[in-house]
Image (cartoon, rainbow, N blue to C red; front, side, top):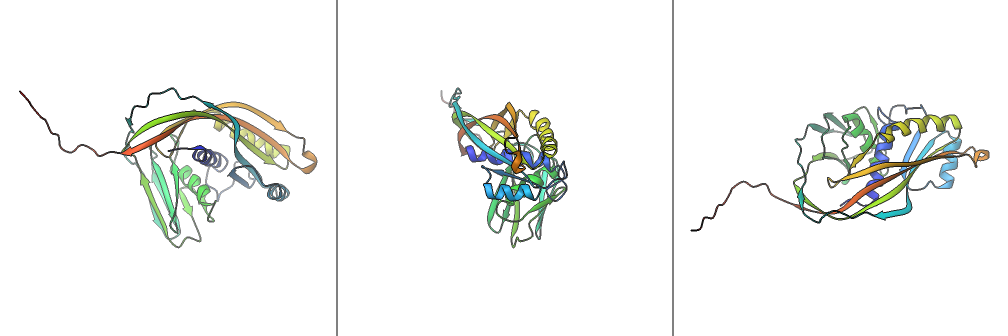
Length: 264
């Protein structure tokens, strides 16, 4: 079932795809090096990155939250799409090909540790590779170039694609606000990064989650903060709300034989 961390992980992946449209080993949309991560930046790390010209983009949950549970607790079957994406592991690289379909999870296991990305409606093999490279890079050094994810230190690399054969029950629903913050060392850099994020995030309406359910994302507000410009810090905050369910799932079998009882 999705929780707060799952939503944060999806947002990090989406932002990384926006700022690195051709993969994390290629140039970003502005040409600057960028780090996208969950949580709030550690001051010492942020200072070092700003001095080095590295843009930080953080995803942080805000305090405000609403209980918006309003649906029945009926079980319903998740759609099972035909898998049209392919993933091939060879040595220290995984290559994606084909076309994306939803709902679908793409997983890469590095030295026994799995990393799972739920595909979004507009994904491509390149954006899937970018998202997984970002997830893997939290634990192992990883990068992507086009549709290829490379993990140089991997001694065992596996990949799987998984669709759903489950029924799902929604037990509650919440609307949570998230602050997506761009941290830069110059106002022009901030403007370039923020412009790319603003247009791409603004067109999003739904995000896919790892259990096959959907979250609804809505723009709330934007603000710029220049109070720390003496420290070469220029900041832009985007606030988005995500309405997402808490669910329980059960695996179900496809009917292969029917039984009909007839009584007089």
